[in-house]
Length: 393
Ligand SMILES: Cc1ncc(COP(=O)(O)O)c(C=O)c1O
Image (cartoon, rainbow, N blue to C red; front, side, top):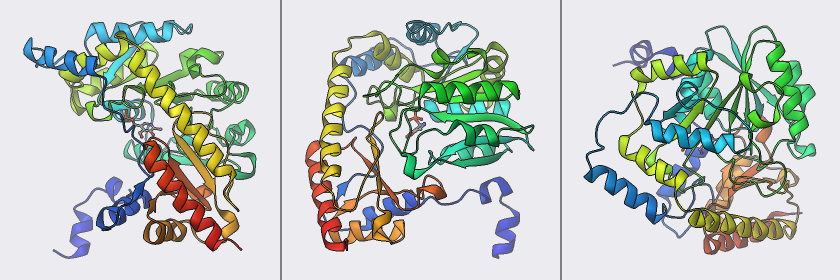
């Protein structure tokens, strides 16, 4: 088959999806023989808490192995709504919640529901690349708004508001941010949300890291804006409960959006895994200690990472306020980010995610994940420090 034929037989929407440099790093790391410190991975190194695993076994044994309602099992929807009620966000578990296959599917459904061809989705960057891809898959056009490295990638409401216009269907706000670890200021979020509402655009609040806030106001975006009816909230069990592989997330949205999202769910996965949903129910309603322990470990790693960064010659980073990422500014080395990341891997045994994987404005930056354990972090930072001392001028 010629390339031309191959192209003709692939939908334009998938041809437009670019290969991420983060994937390039994964592949290089996998092909590498040596013992590498893997700091590129955004997933907790902890195992899922035992009571959650038990609940899953129990669900299987008691026959919870069938399709569930598209919107998810009622008990889980209630548990999700209760969590938000705790911070003053009123969510109707029967009409405004949909349980999904991870936050990824929640985002996909949200985009398919509110983004039409010819519309735009405003995305502050650096940001998680899937938001732009999902926008394209829904037929929309991502409009990236670069935040300033010199301002530590704080949310710049004026720049974002300037990008909102007639065609805007939604604005994505990821709080805490992947990859910068920033927790956007409540005032800035409020200003952006108000401008979106004025233009009839939704805020899609990606809050998968919401339970990992070390500094700043950790409340949900829906809890801090004037018009929560304009906010579509996406979150999941993945990061909070070390449950990335269980694939359970949720979408909270005004009834009209939620009803349509749950309706099209029938054509994506119909429902999240029944066993996963029972596990998620145990996670949300069971003992909190394992979660506190994981959070405490992340907080400790964040202290460690912050100290190590301070000691790195020529490298700075905004202090991670949330999530488990530090976004290192390596512009002083005057080299392309991918080339620095490659040198780190090949010569110093450390794998990091090149900042350009999160938008062009990420050039000159490297994302380091402290979801990895302390030993790996120590080895990783030893490598980064050796690089900085050897390659710095
Ligand atoms: C910002 C952001 N949103 C969503 C997701 C997807 O989460 P889930 O595992 O629940 O699909 C991730 C995963 O890394 C993420 O970083």
